[in-house]
Image 1 (tube, rainbow, N blue to C red):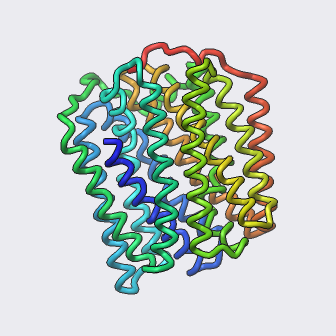
Image 2: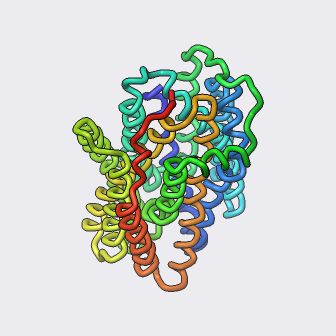
Image 3: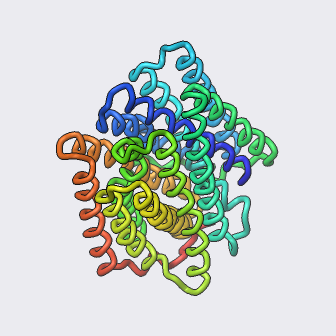
Length: 387
Protein backbone atom coordinates (compact mmCIF):
# COMPACT_ATOMS: atom_id res chain seq x y z
CA UNK A 1 0.00 0.00 0.00
CA UNK A 2 2.77 2.42 0.94
CA UNK A 3 4.66 1.78 -2.31
CA UNK A 4 1.50 2.05 -4.39
CA UNK A 5 0.63 5.33 -2.69
CA UNK A 6 4.16 6.59 -3.29
CA UNK A 7 3.90 5.92 -7.03
CA UNK A 8 0.43 7.44 -7.30
CA UNK A 9 1.30 10.57 -5.34
CA UNK A 10 4.48 11.11 -7.36
CA UNK A 11 2.41 10.90 -10.53
CA UNK A 12 -0.07 13.42 -9.13
CA UNK A 13 2.77 15.89 -8.62
CA UNK A 14 3.65 15.64 -12.31
CA UNK A 15 0.05 16.65 -13.00
CA UNK A 16 0.17 19.54 -10.51
CA UNK A 17 3.42 20.90 -11.95
CA UNK A 18 2.24 20.66 -15.56
CA UNK A 19 -1.29 22.01 -15.07
CA UNK A 20 -0.17 24.97 -12.96
CA UNK A 21 2.55 25.86 -15.43
CA UNK A 22 0.18 25.50 -18.39
CA UNK A 23 -2.47 27.70 -16.78
CA UNK A 24 0.11 30.41 -16.01
CA UNK A 25 1.45 30.23 -19.58
CA UNK A 26 -2.06 30.57 -21.01
CA UNK A 27 -3.17 33.43 -18.74
CA UNK A 28 -0.14 35.08 -17.10
CA UNK A 29 -2.31 35.48 -14.00
CA UNK A 30 -1.58 34.40 -10.43
CA UNK A 31 -5.31 34.52 -9.74
CA UNK A 32 -5.92 31.99 -12.54
CA UNK A 33 -3.45 29.63 -10.87
CA UNK A 34 -5.36 30.20 -7.63
CA UNK A 35 -8.61 29.28 -9.39
CA UNK A 36 -6.97 26.01 -10.47
CA UNK A 37 -6.19 25.31 -6.81
CA UNK A 38 -9.82 26.02 -5.93
CA UNK A 39 -11.03 23.68 -8.70
CA UNK A 40 -8.76 21.00 -7.26
CA UNK A 41 -9.78 21.51 -3.63
CA UNK A 42 -13.40 22.63 -3.92
CA UNK A 43 -14.88 19.13 -4.31
CA UNK A 44 -13.57 18.19 -0.88
CA UNK A 45 -15.78 20.87 0.65
CA UNK A 46 -18.90 19.81 -1.23
CA UNK A 47 -18.35 16.06 -0.99
CA UNK A 48 -17.07 15.76 2.59
CA UNK A 49 -20.35 14.38 3.92
CA UNK A 50 -20.79 11.65 1.29
CA UNK A 51 -17.07 10.81 1.51
CA UNK A 52 -17.24 10.30 5.27
CA UNK A 53 -20.30 8.09 4.96
CA UNK A 54 -18.59 6.01 2.25
CA UNK A 55 -15.63 5.46 4.58
CA UNK A 56 -17.80 4.45 7.52
CA UNK A 57 -20.43 2.34 5.74
CA UNK A 58 -18.70 0.57 2.84
CA UNK A 59 -15.61 -1.51 2.11
CA UNK A 60 -12.85 1.11 2.24
CA UNK A 61 -10.75 -0.86 -0.22
CA UNK A 62 -13.59 -0.90 -2.77
CA UNK A 63 -14.10 2.85 -2.35
CA UNK A 64 -10.43 3.37 -3.17
CA UNK A 65 -10.53 1.10 -6.21
CA UNK A 66 -13.43 3.02 -7.75
CA UNK A 67 -12.20 6.52 -6.97
CA UNK A 68 -8.61 5.97 -8.07
CA UNK A 69 -9.79 4.40 -11.32
CA UNK A 70 -11.95 7.47 -11.97
CA UNK A 71 -8.96 9.75 -11.39
CA UNK A 72 -6.89 7.73 -13.87
CA UNK A 73 -9.56 8.15 -16.56
CA UNK A 74 -9.72 11.93 -16.00
CA UNK A 75 -5.92 12.27 -16.19
CA UNK A 76 -5.77 10.24 -19.39
CA UNK A 77 -8.54 12.37 -20.92
CA UNK A 78 -6.57 15.53 -20.12
CA UNK A 79 -3.45 14.03 -21.71
CA UNK A 80 -5.36 13.22 -24.91
CA UNK A 81 -6.94 16.69 -24.98
CA UNK A 82 -3.52 18.30 -24.61
CA UNK A 83 -2.01 16.19 -27.40
CA UNK A 84 -4.95 17.18 -29.60
CA UNK A 85 -4.46 20.90 -28.86
CA UNK A 86 -7.79 21.14 -27.01
CA UNK A 87 -6.44 21.90 -23.53
CA UNK A 88 -7.97 25.32 -23.00
CA UNK A 89 -8.18 26.92 -19.57
CA UNK A 90 -11.78 25.73 -19.26
CA UNK A 91 -10.91 22.14 -20.21
CA UNK A 92 -8.05 22.04 -17.69
CA UNK A 93 -10.32 23.39 -14.94
CA UNK A 94 -13.12 20.94 -15.78
CA UNK A 95 -10.96 17.79 -15.87
CA UNK A 96 -9.09 18.91 -12.76
CA UNK A 97 -12.47 19.23 -11.03
CA UNK A 98 -13.46 15.71 -12.11
CA UNK A 99 -10.15 14.24 -10.96
CA UNK A 100 -10.34 15.86 -7.54
CA UNK A 101 -13.95 14.77 -7.08
CA UNK A 102 -12.56 11.23 -7.13
CA UNK A 103 -9.85 12.24 -4.68
CA UNK A 104 -12.39 13.89 -2.36
CA UNK A 105 -14.65 10.84 -2.27
CA UNK A 106 -11.78 8.44 -1.62
CA UNK A 107 -9.54 10.29 0.85
CA UNK A 108 -11.39 9.57 4.14
CA UNK A 109 -11.58 5.87 3.24
CA UNK A 110 -7.84 5.77 2.51
CA UNK A 111 -6.93 7.59 5.73
CA UNK A 112 -9.28 5.37 7.75
CA UNK A 113 -7.68 2.28 6.18
CA UNK A 114 -4.34 2.98 7.91
CA UNK A 115 -5.41 1.84 11.42
CA UNK A 116 -6.67 -1.42 9.92
CA UNK A 117 -3.21 -2.13 8.48
CA UNK A 118 -1.13 -1.29 11.58
CA UNK A 119 -1.35 -2.27 15.28
CA UNK A 120 -2.72 0.35 17.65
CA UNK A 121 0.65 0.70 19.42
CA UNK A 122 2.25 1.66 16.12
CA UNK A 123 -0.58 3.79 14.75
CA UNK A 124 1.20 7.12 15.26
CA UNK A 125 4.27 5.80 13.46
CA UNK A 126 2.09 4.43 10.66
CA UNK A 127 0.51 7.86 10.12
CA UNK A 128 3.96 9.48 10.13
CA UNK A 129 5.36 6.92 7.68
CA UNK A 130 2.34 7.43 5.44
CA UNK A 131 2.86 11.20 5.56
CA UNK A 132 6.58 10.74 4.93
CA UNK A 133 5.72 8.72 1.83
CA UNK A 134 3.56 11.57 0.59
CA UNK A 135 6.56 13.87 1.00
CA UNK A 136 8.95 11.45 -0.68
CA UNK A 137 6.50 11.70 -3.60
CA UNK A 138 6.57 15.48 -3.22
CA UNK A 139 10.37 15.29 -3.37
CA UNK A 140 10.54 13.05 -6.46
CA UNK A 141 7.39 14.03 -8.35
CA UNK A 142 8.02 17.75 -8.90
CA UNK A 143 11.66 17.16 -9.86
CA UNK A 144 10.62 14.54 -12.41
CA UNK A 145 7.70 16.76 -13.42
CA UNK A 146 9.91 19.79 -14.05
CA UNK A 147 12.26 17.75 -16.23
CA UNK A 148 9.40 15.97 -18.04
CA UNK A 149 7.61 19.27 -18.61
CA UNK A 150 10.78 20.80 -20.05
CA UNK A 151 11.71 17.81 -22.25
CA UNK A 152 8.37 16.23 -23.16
CA UNK A 153 5.64 18.80 -22.54
CA UNK A 154 2.56 18.80 -20.29
CA UNK A 155 0.65 16.02 -22.11
CA UNK A 156 3.22 13.41 -21.11
CA UNK A 157 3.04 14.58 -17.49
CA UNK A 158 -0.72 13.98 -17.54
CA UNK A 159 -0.28 10.57 -19.19
CA UNK A 160 2.33 9.45 -16.66
CA UNK A 161 -0.02 10.49 -13.86
CA UNK A 162 -2.80 8.40 -15.38
CA UNK A 163 -0.48 5.39 -15.48
CA UNK A 164 0.68 5.95 -11.89
CA UNK A 165 -2.79 5.29 -10.51
CA UNK A 166 -2.53 1.66 -11.62
CA UNK A 167 0.12 1.05 -8.92
CA UNK A 168 -2.27 1.96 -6.12
CA UNK A 169 -5.20 0.18 -7.75
CA UNK A 170 -3.02 -2.97 -7.90
CA UNK A 171 -2.00 -2.57 -4.24
CA UNK A 172 -5.60 -2.10 -3.12
CA UNK A 173 -6.66 -5.16 -5.09
CA UNK A 174 -4.20 -7.22 -3.03
CA UNK A 175 -5.67 -6.03 0.29
CA UNK A 176 -8.47 -8.25 1.55
CA UNK A 177 -12.03 -6.90 1.81
CA UNK A 178 -12.49 -4.38 4.63
CA UNK A 179 -16.03 -4.69 6.05
CA UNK A 180 -17.92 -1.52 6.91
CA UNK A 181 -17.27 -0.71 10.59
CA UNK A 182 -20.51 1.19 11.14
CA UNK A 183 -23.67 -0.65 10.07
CA UNK A 184 -25.94 1.78 11.92
CA UNK A 185 -27.58 5.00 10.86
CA UNK A 186 -25.04 7.45 9.40
CA UNK A 187 -24.59 10.77 11.13
CA UNK A 188 -25.62 13.80 9.09
CA UNK A 189 -23.20 16.60 8.29
CA UNK A 190 -24.85 18.70 11.00
CA UNK A 191 -24.43 15.94 13.58
CA UNK A 192 -20.77 15.50 12.64
CA UNK A 193 -20.19 19.22 13.08
CA UNK A 194 -21.91 19.19 16.46
CA UNK A 195 -19.74 16.28 17.62
CA UNK A 196 -16.60 18.16 16.58
CA UNK A 197 -17.77 21.50 17.98
CA UNK A 198 -18.56 19.98 21.38
CA UNK A 199 -15.06 18.55 21.78
CA UNK A 200 -12.40 21.20 22.59
CA UNK A 201 -9.61 19.12 21.07
CA UNK A 202 -11.39 18.34 17.81
CA UNK A 203 -12.60 21.92 17.57
CA UNK A 204 -9.08 23.34 17.91
CA UNK A 205 -7.60 20.73 15.55
CA UNK A 206 -10.07 21.50 12.78
CA UNK A 207 -9.96 25.28 13.17
CA UNK A 208 -6.17 25.21 13.37
CA UNK A 209 -5.85 23.08 10.26
CA UNK A 210 -8.26 25.30 8.32
CA UNK A 211 -6.30 28.45 9.14
CA UNK A 212 -2.96 26.77 8.53
CA UNK A 213 -4.07 25.40 5.14
CA UNK A 214 -5.43 28.80 4.09
CA UNK A 215 -2.34 30.77 5.06
CA UNK A 216 0.45 28.27 4.33
CA UNK A 217 -0.73 26.76 1.04
CA UNK A 218 0.26 29.64 -1.31
CA UNK A 219 3.90 28.56 -0.89
CA UNK A 220 2.94 25.36 -2.72
CA UNK A 221 -0.02 26.31 -4.89
CA UNK A 222 1.51 29.53 -6.28
CA UNK A 223 4.89 27.90 -6.93
CA UNK A 224 4.57 28.47 -10.72
CA UNK A 225 4.27 32.21 -10.05
CA UNK A 226 7.17 32.13 -7.55
CA UNK A 227 9.36 30.31 -10.09
CA UNK A 228 8.45 32.84 -12.78
CA UNK A 229 9.29 35.77 -10.49
CA UNK A 230 12.73 34.25 -9.82
CA UNK A 231 13.21 33.33 -13.52
CA UNK A 232 13.62 29.68 -12.59
CA UNK A 233 11.56 28.22 -15.44
CA UNK A 234 10.19 24.69 -15.40
CA UNK A 235 13.29 23.28 -13.70
CA UNK A 236 13.11 25.97 -11.00
CA UNK A 237 9.45 25.13 -10.40
CA UNK A 238 10.32 21.46 -9.94
CA UNK A 239 13.19 22.38 -7.61
CA UNK A 240 10.96 24.55 -5.40
CA UNK A 241 8.31 21.86 -4.96
CA UNK A 242 10.91 19.12 -4.53
CA UNK A 243 12.62 21.20 -1.82
CA UNK A 244 9.33 21.33 0.05
CA UNK A 245 8.99 17.56 -0.30
CA UNK A 246 12.56 17.00 0.87
CA UNK A 247 11.88 19.18 3.88
CA UNK A 248 8.82 17.06 4.57
CA UNK A 249 10.92 13.89 4.69
CA UNK A 250 13.38 15.51 7.10
CA UNK A 251 10.50 16.90 9.15
CA UNK A 252 8.91 13.46 9.44
CA UNK A 253 12.16 11.98 10.78
CA UNK A 254 12.57 14.82 13.27
CA UNK A 255 8.94 14.59 14.37
CA UNK A 256 9.19 10.85 15.00
CA UNK A 257 12.33 11.29 17.11
CA UNK A 258 10.92 14.15 19.15
CA UNK A 259 7.61 12.34 19.62
CA UNK A 260 9.55 9.38 20.99
CA UNK A 261 11.12 11.74 23.51
CA UNK A 262 7.78 13.06 24.71
CA UNK A 263 6.92 15.96 22.40
CA UNK A 264 3.24 16.71 23.01
CA UNK A 265 0.89 17.14 20.08
CA UNK A 266 -0.60 20.26 21.68
CA UNK A 267 2.88 21.87 21.54
CA UNK A 268 4.01 20.51 18.17
CA UNK A 269 1.10 22.11 16.30
CA UNK A 270 1.59 25.78 17.28
CA UNK A 271 5.38 25.41 16.96
CA UNK A 272 4.95 24.09 13.42
CA UNK A 273 2.54 26.90 12.54
CA UNK A 274 4.87 29.62 13.79
CA UNK A 275 7.99 28.08 12.22
CA UNK A 276 6.25 27.71 8.85
CA UNK A 277 5.35 31.42 8.94
CA UNK A 278 9.07 32.26 9.16
CA UNK A 279 9.84 30.12 6.11
CA UNK A 280 6.95 31.67 4.19
CA UNK A 281 8.18 35.17 5.04
CA UNK A 282 11.58 34.30 3.56
CA UNK A 283 9.89 32.97 0.40
CA UNK A 284 7.97 36.24 0.17
CA UNK A 285 11.03 38.48 0.51
CA UNK A 286 13.80 36.44 -1.13
CA UNK A 287 15.19 37.70 -4.47
CA UNK A 288 17.28 34.54 -5.01
CA UNK A 289 16.19 31.10 -6.13
CA UNK A 290 18.73 29.34 -3.89
CA UNK A 291 17.50 31.10 -0.73
CA UNK A 292 13.90 30.45 -1.70
CA UNK A 293 14.66 26.74 -2.15
CA UNK A 294 16.21 26.66 1.34
CA UNK A 295 13.12 28.37 2.78
CA UNK A 296 10.89 25.83 1.03
CA UNK A 297 12.80 23.04 2.80
CA UNK A 298 11.91 24.67 6.14
CA UNK A 299 8.28 25.07 5.04
CA UNK A 300 8.07 21.42 4.00
CA UNK A 301 9.46 20.22 7.31
CA UNK A 302 6.80 21.95 9.38
CA UNK A 303 4.06 21.31 6.83
CA UNK A 304 4.45 17.58 7.56
CA UNK A 305 4.30 18.26 11.31
CA UNK A 306 0.89 19.91 10.93
CA UNK A 307 -0.65 17.23 8.75
CA UNK A 308 0.78 14.20 10.53
CA UNK A 309 0.08 15.41 14.07
CA UNK A 310 -3.44 16.66 13.26
CA UNK A 311 -4.37 13.45 11.45
CA UNK A 312 -3.08 11.32 14.33
CA UNK A 313 -4.83 13.41 16.98
CA UNK A 314 -8.18 13.31 15.18
CA UNK A 315 -8.10 9.54 14.72
CA UNK A 316 -6.97 8.86 18.30
CA UNK A 317 -9.49 11.31 19.71
CA UNK A 318 -12.57 10.15 17.78
CA UNK A 319 -14.95 7.31 18.44
CA UNK A 320 -14.30 4.37 16.10
CA UNK A 321 -17.72 4.61 14.46
CA UNK A 322 -17.22 8.31 13.66
CA UNK A 323 -13.62 8.25 12.40
CA UNK A 324 -14.59 8.46 8.72
CA UNK A 325 -16.81 11.47 9.32
CA UNK A 326 -14.22 13.26 11.46
CA UNK A 327 -11.65 12.64 8.73
CA UNK A 328 -14.12 14.08 6.22
CA UNK A 329 -14.21 17.27 8.30
CA UNK A 330 -10.41 17.19 8.38
CA UNK A 331 -10.49 16.86 4.59
CA UNK A 332 -12.70 19.94 4.35
CA UNK A 333 -10.33 21.85 6.61
CA UNK A 334 -7.27 20.91 4.55
CA UNK A 335 -8.36 21.11 0.96
CA UNK A 336 -11.00 23.78 1.49
CA UNK A 337 -8.46 25.92 3.27
CA UNK A 338 -5.91 25.35 0.50
CA UNK A 339 -8.37 26.30 -2.24
CA UNK A 340 -9.70 29.43 -0.53
CA UNK A 341 -6.31 30.59 0.73
CA UNK A 342 -4.54 30.08 -2.61
CA UNK A 343 -7.25 31.90 -4.55
CA UNK A 344 -7.18 34.79 -2.08
CA UNK A 345 -3.40 35.02 -2.21
CA UNK A 346 -3.46 34.86 -6.01
CA UNK A 347 -5.96 37.71 -6.26
CA UNK A 348 -3.96 39.78 -3.77
CA UNK A 349 -0.75 39.02 -5.70
CA UNK A 350 -2.31 40.39 -8.90
CA UNK A 351 -3.21 43.56 -6.99
CA UNK A 352 -0.11 44.32 -4.89
CA UNK A 353 2.54 41.87 -6.11
CA UNK A 354 3.46 38.33 -5.17
CA UNK A 355 6.04 39.14 -2.49
CA UNK A 356 3.82 41.52 -0.48
CA UNK A 357 0.85 39.12 -0.75
CA UNK A 358 2.85 36.18 0.59
CA UNK A 359 4.25 38.34 3.38
CA UNK A 360 0.73 39.34 4.48
CA UNK A 361 -0.17 35.64 4.65
CA UNK A 362 3.03 34.91 6.63
CA UNK A 363 2.25 37.59 9.22
CA UNK A 364 -1.31 36.33 9.67
CA UNK A 365 -0.01 32.77 10.10
CA UNK A 366 2.53 33.92 12.69
CA UNK A 367 -0.20 35.69 14.68
CA UNK A 368 -2.32 32.53 14.76
CA UNK A 369 0.66 30.36 15.65
CA UNK A 370 1.71 32.53 18.58
CA UNK A 371 -1.87 32.83 19.86
CA UNK A 372 -2.40 29.07 19.72
CA UNK A 373 0.95 28.54 21.47
CA UNK A 374 -0.23 30.75 24.33
CA UNK A 375 -3.66 29.03 24.42
CA UNK A 376 -2.85 25.33 24.06
CA UNK A 377 -5.59 22.67 24.42
CA UNK A 378 -4.19 19.90 26.61
CA UNK A 379 -6.86 17.37 25.63
CA UNK A 380 -5.28 17.13 22.16
CA UNK A 381 -2.67 14.89 23.82
CA UNK A 382 -5.29 12.42 25.11
CA UNK A 383 -6.24 9.32 23.12
CA UNK A 384 -9.89 8.84 24.08
CA UNK A 385 -10.97 6.08 21.72
CA UNK A 386 -9.61 5.86 18.19
CA UNK A 387 -8.52 2.82 16.20
